[in-house]
Image 1 (cartoon, rainbow, N blue to C red):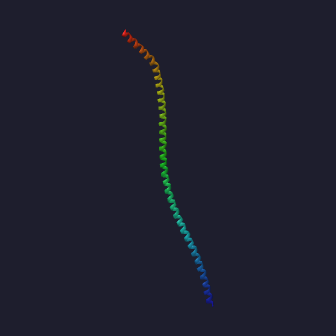
Image 2: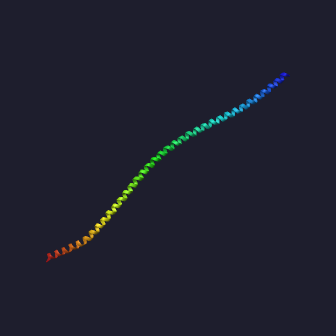
Image 3: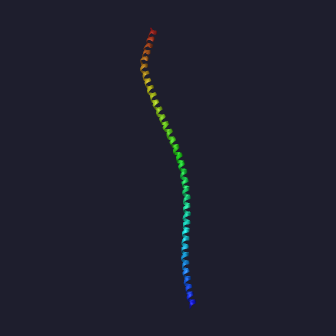
Amino acid sequence: REAEVVQLALAADLQSSLRAVQELSAKLAALEERRQLDVAEGDHAEVRRVALEAELRDLHCKLLTTRAAATKERAVAVALRDELEAGRVRAGRLAAEASQASRAKQHLLTVREPLLQSLAVRQRDMWQEERA
């Protein structure tokens, strides 16, 4: 009978140990699954980090290109502004020259008419003297 009690106690201990092993195995499996998820998340995070770094490099290159284009556009705008101002100055100068030429022409016409009349009268007088 004592052997049966010992066997029953051993069987109970064995069952208890088996339950503990099952619980520990389940905990271990859960921990392993969590570790694998963490590794996968870490791998995913690394892939995202690498992709973001590549995107950042690409954006930096685009920024440099855009800055260079903006600098060129500013230089072109300044050159165009200078050219426009030079055109305005030239147009003003040409307008002043045209006004002066118009005044000179008007002066010439006011002086020329009496001179022409005088010459015409003198020519007529000389012609009449020659005929006489």
